[in-house]
Each structure stands twice: as C-alpha cells, then as structure tokens.
Amino acid sequence: MAEVINMPRLSDTMEEGVVAKWLKQKGDKVEEGDILAEIETDKATMEFESFHEGTLLHIGIEEGETAPVDTLLAIIGEEGEDISSLLKGGGESSNEKSSDEKQSSEGNEEEKSSSEEEEAEDEGGSGEIPEGVEVVKMPRLSDTMEEGTVATWLKKKGDKVEEGDILAEIETDKATMEFESFYEGILLHIGIEEGETAPVDSVLAIIGPEGTDVSAVLEGGGAKKAAAPKKSQEQKEESSKEEKSEAASEQTSKDGGRIFASPLAKKMAEDKGIDLADVKGSGENNRIVKKDIESYKPSEKATEKKPAQKQEAGLEKGEPAKTEVKPYIPAGEEGFEEVKNSQMRKTIAKRLAESKFNAPHYYLTVEVDMANAMASRKQINELPDVKVSFNDMVIKASAMALRKHPQVNSQWTGDTTKIAKHIHMGVAVAVEEGLVVPVLPFADQMSMTQIGANVKELAGKARNKKLQPKEMEGSTFTVSNLGMFGITEFTSIINQPNSSILSVGAIVEKPVVRNGQIVVGNTMKVTLACDHRTVDGATGAAFLQTFKQYLENPVVMLA
Image: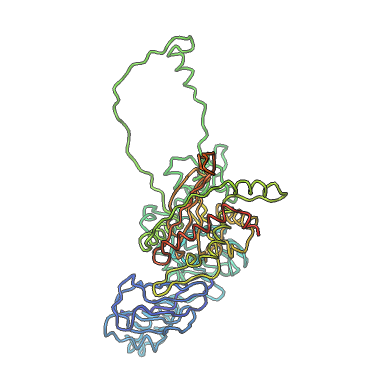
C-alpha cells in the first residue's frame, strides 16, 4: 500500500520548507533510512530520510520550490501501483492514516452508495472531536527531537487549565523543558504518564469543558499514537501505572503522614532499595520526583560495633591485637545496575558516533607559553567588577584566529564547503547526563569580560536544564576545556557540522628554556581536531600558530 510523505517539521519554528535537492528520483528504489531529499528550513539545510521502503512513485514538490509543512512531498509504494486516488483525493493530508482511510472508502464505493448514511454515521462516531475539546500532542521542542519523556506533570486529570499554564516538564534530546498550554479548560485525559517516552505528535493530553465525554476521541484513533510508546519493552514490565501510582500514594512517612511520589520515582526507589520515607521530596506538596531519588544519599549511621570490637580485641587495654592469616577465598555476587538512557544521552551518542565515523579526524597539538597570559589576567582582574578566566582568553584568541583563517570556520555538505562569514563559538559544558554545547554568537566581537559573563550564564542554564534549543544551535567552531580537572592534553570529537574543535589542557609549571637559560615556566597544551575534508594540515597548523601568538601576547586582544 502506498505511503504518503508530507513536508516534515524539521525545526520547532518551521512553517514551510524548500526542497534544496532530491537525492532520489521518480522510479528509484527507496530503502528505509535512505536520504530522500535535502530540505532547507528556517534554521538550516537538513537531510530528510525515508521511514518507508518501496518505489518513489510521485514527487510533489520540485527542487527549489517552497511549500508549507504537511504539504504532499512524495508518495512511496509498490512499482506500478495506482496512486491516482491519493492525488485526486487529497494526498496532501497531514497524516498517512487519512490516506489509508480514503483508499479504503474509495475501494468500497459501491457499498457506500448503497448505505451512505450508515457509513457517514460510523465515520462521525469513530473519531469526531466534540466542540471545545482540544487534543494536545507531544510537541517537537528541538529541531532534532524525535521522541520525548514526560518528566513531571504539573497538572493532574480534572485540574483547571488556563492558557499559558505549565502542563508538564518534558525531557527532550537536549534538555528538560517546561511545556505550556495554549488552551483553557479542564484536563480531561492524560495520554503519557510520568516517566513514559513517546514519539513527537503522540497524544499527550486532552483539554475541554468539564464533564465532556472524550471516549469517542480515544476510541476513534485520537490517542492510538500514544498506545505504542506506552507499551515499550521497558514499560511492559510495569504491568499497570495506575496500580503503582495508587500504591505510592498509600505509603506513609515515619511520622504517619502521606507520601507523594511519582511512579517513576517509586520504581527507581524500588530498584535501588531506597525507603521513600527517608527521601525528601522537592516537587509540589513535597512530592518525590526522579531527581530526588537520583540525588538521594543515605545518612551515615553511627557504628556501634566498633567499641565492642575494640574491647574484644583488647585494644582499649593496650594489648596487641592477635590476627590470624586466613587464605583469601573470592566471594560475592555479580551484578549490573541498568540506568535508562535519557534522550540527551542517546542523542549525544548518536551525534558523536556519526561525527567520528563520517568525518576523517586528524589532530594537531601545540604548547603555549602562558607567562604573559597569567600576568595580564592578574592585572585585568585587579580592576573593579572585572573577572576574566583563562578559558575566556582562549575563546577570544580562537575567535580572532578564525577571522584570519576562515577555512577552519567551515562546514562540509558533500557537494560544497560552506565557509561561515560569522563566528559563533560553541563552548562544551559538562552536565550530569552528558555534554551540551551552548553557543556564543559573534564571539569575535565580544570583549573577554563579555565572553566570561555570557559563558557563566549559559553554563548555569545548562546545569539547571534551563538551556533553550536555540541557545545550542548554529555553532561554527567549538572549544572544550578540561584544564580545570588537571588534564594536560586530550583530543575531542568534532561537533558537527563544525570542521574543527579545540581541546584545552591544564597550565603546567615546568622547566622551560628562555634566552638560553633553563627557568621555571608555565605552559599549556592545546589540540586542534580537524575534519580533513575541509581543513588541510597546513591550514590547521597556520590557525594554531596565529592562536598561539594571540594567547602569548594577550595585549593585542584588548585592542
């Protein structure tokens, strides 16, 4: 059966797209995962892959044409299959299910003509949305988001919802973000429970007038999309979320009070053997949520056995302890702790693997004399209300060096190399669940103090999971610094689509030669990882030479 492919929404703000290039032509064989076309969004040109296999029977949007999201992009099916009904009957519908329904209705045209009223009644009752009822879908909160996890519901079934109220906290592949309601009414149905993962556009909730019966919406397919994620392999083991939720609410604390805990928090506590009565909740009404279990540390109880052991050994009387040497017999129980990968962790793994396997990396290392940088930083920081770190100096020197070596500030697209005229500096920040790269736009135009203030703000947002997707998009070069951990030298994987990433080590005190004399000096090693498709070795070396000159003479960066 033919599958209708619509213009996808490839970014959270995308309203229309341009087909930059078709990589498959009409009549070509298409496998699941093949790249169909390159689509230009409002943010970037992205590859769009097929989720179906078959023959490309129809192209709805030609190269260079612009069309709104959900416009008919292509049709894939069996070779020679008749798709005229899809083209005439509204193949531009926003989902494939509607196409299947239209084919089914046309295939039974004779039956429909004989009992048209019965068919109309059946269709009207199978999925018609009552007036005033709004179906809220799992939103696409980042341009790379394919599925989301409901971290916390801030509204419960039966609660009053106003437009602008925060419905839930949703964990994407990049951050945990608050999702607000665009509708007002009563929360009539929750389609994805806390801790559950579901694809974008799955039914998240239904909002409408109080007392509205939404069973027809649920039975008619409105919530069928959410059924698949609810029955993922991990969640099948949890036989009933409602039973677990009730069990959690029935637990009592040590003072006899009621314990409120999310189903996910309860399951994590059970897996780790944690008594919920010992955990302090940080949610609404002291509700225990996922992060409370993750951060829980059992209090150390005073060991009462030690005095008794000392008496038995005679240590309190000053007598030497008599020990017997016994043969060591290995004993214990083998085991593993399985930790569910977050959306962020899965995306990091996917992107780093793609970068490492697709981009031919090579590495260049240079050692920088930091004597002048240390002296300059000390003088700068003596000024009131000014604080500059070595990392700020590295970012500034990198941005200025990129201005002189634009080939390093580039992207590989296959047919062309895109050399960015702007310098947007990505700064790698380690968070609990992995690594994120907030971006400093036009970093070459910032002073070192402005760079420091912006990096501090973005790093704080990243660690508090408040970083917005737009604050992590558009980097042209990346700096990764592990010097504060005492790492003297390391290599990084390129943050694509960048062509290079700079790895910064610690400042080390060591003997150096100055004017023919061995003296104590301070040096720092930096390693530039380059994509050999865009940056040749000589180009990378020239960039590092310029970078070193700036960092060893920081006064030129103040001009």
